[in-house]
Image (cartoon, rainbow, N blue to C red; front, side, top):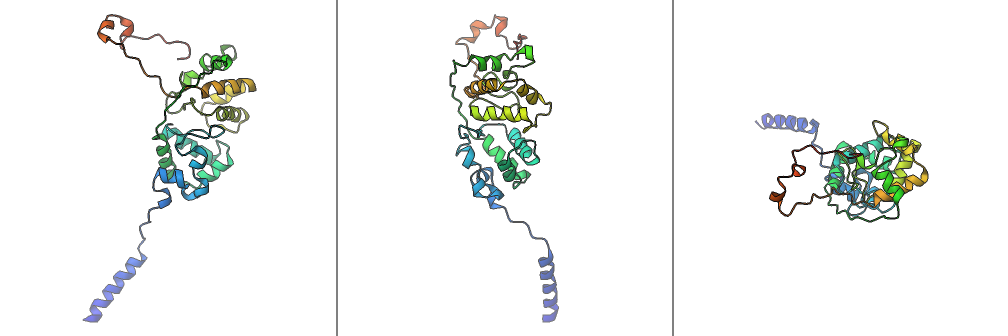
Length: 246
C-alpha cells in the first residue's frame, strides 16, 4: 500500500518541478516612482531623478522638466530615444534597459506630478516675443503659440508645453531639429521651422518660451454673469472670431 501512495506522489512532484514557475515581480520596476528613483534595470546610476530632479523639475540647463507633461508624449519620447529618432547616447542606453511596461509606468509617474507654473517677464526680448506670438509670414514661419499655446502650455498631447522649460534645453532641441539629430516630428514641421531661424533667433525665442508660465490661462468669471447674458459676445454658443495663429 505504501508503494501505491509513494509513486503517485513522486510523479506529481516531478510534474510540478517541470511546470513553468510564475515570474517574481521585478521590485526594481514595480512602479513609476521606483524607476524614477532607482533606475529600473538600468541601475541607480541611471535613475531619472539624478538629472531631472527630485520633483521632475529639470536642472535649469540642458535637462528638461518632466513634471506635468502628457504621459503619452513622454512614453513616445522614450521610445524615440531607443529607436534613434532622438539622438542622445545616455538616454538611449538607459531606455533600452526599460521594457514597454516600465516606460509606461515612469511616464505616468512624471505626468502625475504637480507642476505650478510661475511667469517670468522678459520685457527686453521683443524679437523672441514676436517670433513666438506672431511668427514671420514672409518666411513661412508660423507662430510657436499656434501649437504650443500663448502661455506655453502646449496644445494637445502631441505639442508639449514649452513654458518653464530651461531656455538652454529649448535652444538645444531647435538645434537638434535643424541638424537632423532629432527627427521625430511626423510632418517635419519642426525641422523646417528650425532651419529658417538664425542662431540669434533660436536663442531669443527659446528665452521667451522659457519665461512663460507653462499652464493654460484660467478663464476670468464675470462678477455678475446675469448682467452680461444679453450680449451675444458673452454667449459660449456664439461663433468666435479666430485671431491670427489660433
